[in-house]
Amino acid sequence: MQYDYIIAGGGSAGSVLAARLSEDPAVTVCLLEAGGDGKSFLINTPAMVAAMVSGRPRLHNWAFRTVPQPHLDNRRCYQPRGKALGGSSAINAMLYTRGHPSDYDAWADLGADGWDWQSVLPYFLKSQGNSRGTSALHNDKGPLQVTDQQSPHAISTAFIRAMESVQVPATKDFNGANQHGAGLYQVTQFHHGPRKGRRCSAAAAYLHPVLSRPNLTVLTGATAQRITLDGTRAKGLIAKHKNRTLTLTARREVILSAGAFGSPQLLLLSGIGPEDELRAHGIPVRHALPGVGQNLQDHLDHTLHWHSIRPDVVGFNPAGILRLLRAIRPFRTEGKGTLTSVGAEAGAFFSSHPSVQVPDLQAHFCVAIVDDHFRRIHTADGFTAHVCVLRPHSRGTVGLTDTDPASPPRIDPNFLSDPRDMELLKAGTRIMEQAMASGAMAPWRGRRLYPHDGTDKSIEADIRARADTIYHPVGTCRMGRDDLAVTDPALRVHGLEGLRVIDASVMPRLIGGNTNAPTIMIAEKAADLIRNA
Image 1 (cartoon, rainbow, N blue to C red):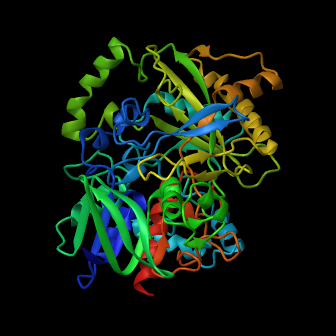
Image 2: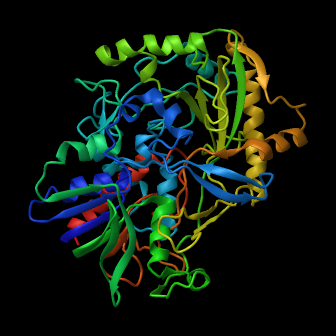
Image 3: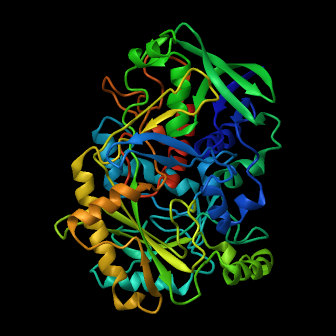
């Protein structure tokens, strides 16, 4: 089976690439995705993120776990990743943020030429179909539907007032001229037509509308196992599809879009990576590339929970479930109501100290008790305030568990290995606790879960006992020009021909915000790089 382009991974980046590259009828594109078609009721219904993200059961979710984390009480932390067309955009909270412009200028300073803010902004705009219309920082004509939330809860507006009490001003646009502030998130959600209120994953935006193209082949339930090489040129992929082994040949390029965990794993299984890692697993070294799997970065998140006095939140109790059932009709007929809620309705970008000019902390405010990624269910009505460090100093790795392509990768985020991250997370926790103690939250604020005595030591102990990812792993095939860079600024794998990595793994440094919109931007820009090659 021969194609011009073979893409391994149908997530946020892979969906964009398959759609954009197949716009040229003269080329053939094959996309491999291990999961399903990304069209299920669970995926389409925003509030069903609670059912998917927990991984219990594994619904459209790889549900990975890390190795024990020595700085988090030796816990094996949780790493949900989407397993369907659309990838993690099919199971995430749909929040649309781009980070801070300085994040991209920093990429360029680190050797990612052409990825500065002014160079990437056109691709953010190209992707975006924003209900607010067109401006210098927004566009309403792109495929990815972005909109204000249909039916936010009153408590989310109260959260904004609570943050104002700790000198974080209200904002209406985290992607505007100034990121700093508290407000309601815009979300990737259909905002007009028969699909109004439904999730707009990368697959729903880009891929589903073009599945009938004769030059596009999409294989779901297909897992790439290794890259085939002819000398220093990527020749194709070996894949497993419906209990059959497929040998796929690429006339032009093989593209890895399997994410920050899957792309380095596939390189390693193919004999591309650090020599010591490959030899430890008995894999012949086909191309020594020491940076593969290094530089893992993720946003570590600390959650604060309260019971709610008022019932106008989401609760997993008979009354709460009845409210959800009643919400089915307005969701189906009008695209409104509780089922359109992404849970994390409000948030904030703020600074750990007044002297910090660019926000270094982010808050997500959820209208339910989200304890251990919904894996610990509480029947009481409640709410959750999250806080995370936006640009962590800690660095981790991704490697192989063994040589079986079906085995999960070995994930070691090395959370809090740099003590600066703990200090920032404690500062963010204190600010969040002050906000939640404000009068704005009083009508809802009931008993707190996991209380502590307020000392520095007790906050640190709570962080070590409960903090975990907020789902933004990046950096394991980073772009640059130094010896540890895996890809060049055109996202071509150093030292090999016909092979690129295009997904969040190429980010040199984690951006200060949620990573889905930047991943889609990367794929949009990469599609142009490929077409212009």
